[in-house]
Every structure is written in structure tokens, then in C-alpha cells.
Length: 168
Image 1: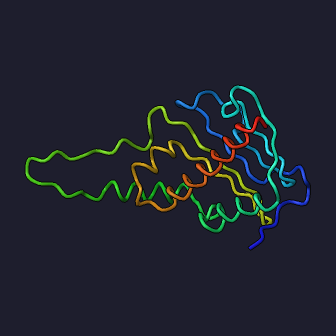
Image 2: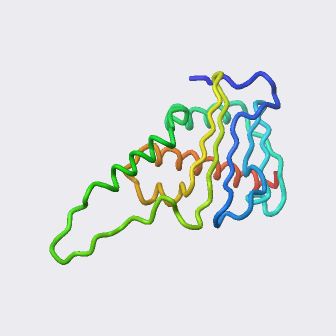
Image 3: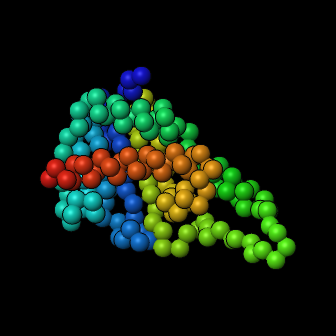
């Protein structure tokens, strides 16, 4: 499937940022991908400076297929995930007499940053902000939407690191 990107070559198609908590101050987006394949990596991932790079149309389409088709980004609803996690927390886990009961760390997760991902394609624009995504996805591996959002974040981090490693 081919995803439609905005006609304006400079339009943002994908943007990712991690800010706050241990991620540090918000220094702007960590990764921005534009409709023409231009990529900007922010200073946090770029070794203290912003770097420019480029991906092909095929790479952009593969990134969109990964995020939109395989990991259902447009369907992610942070409020629905919060309700799912609250319901899971109310379910008692199996215990034996005298056994300690593990209490999950969150949410909210102390010292955790906020992950924000924006994707604009197919005439839609969806932005998701999630506090403590790394910790939440690790603590709740059974929660498919969290795992999918984390997979997208990891794919974006990999792209940013690849561009940064090439010096831009």
C-alpha cells in the first residue's frame, strides 16, 4: 500500500520528540521527516547539534507502512490505554500464602519523559503524547497499543541514529 503524503514538499510527515524527565529539557524535535524525504535530527540524538539528512521515497513509504499499517498509529488512543491499564491494575494477581504482592511502579512514572509522535499522511494528522512510554511498555508487555507505540518510537530512534552516524 502506498500512503499519501502532503503535497507541500516541506510539510512534516513524521515528527518525534522525547522531553522532560531523564530525557532532559525539550531541545525541539529529535527527528523530523518531511514530505520530500528531508530529515532533520535534533541535538539530543545528533551529538549536541542538529543534523540534516535524506531518505528515499521508498524508505518514507516503508516507515509509514510500519507505523500506520503494522502498528496502527492512527488508532492509538492514550485515554483508552489509560483505562486498560487501570482495569489491569484492579485485577488481583495470583499469590500464595505469605507471598509478597508486587505493586507496579506507575503510571505516572517518576523521572520519565514524554514521548510525542506526530504523523501526517493519507489526509490525516494524528499526534500522540505519552508519559513514560518506555517504562509503561516494559511494565505492560501484554498491552498491544503500548507495544506498538514503543515499536514506532524505536524505529524513529533507529532512523535518527542512522542519519546522525552518517554525519547528516
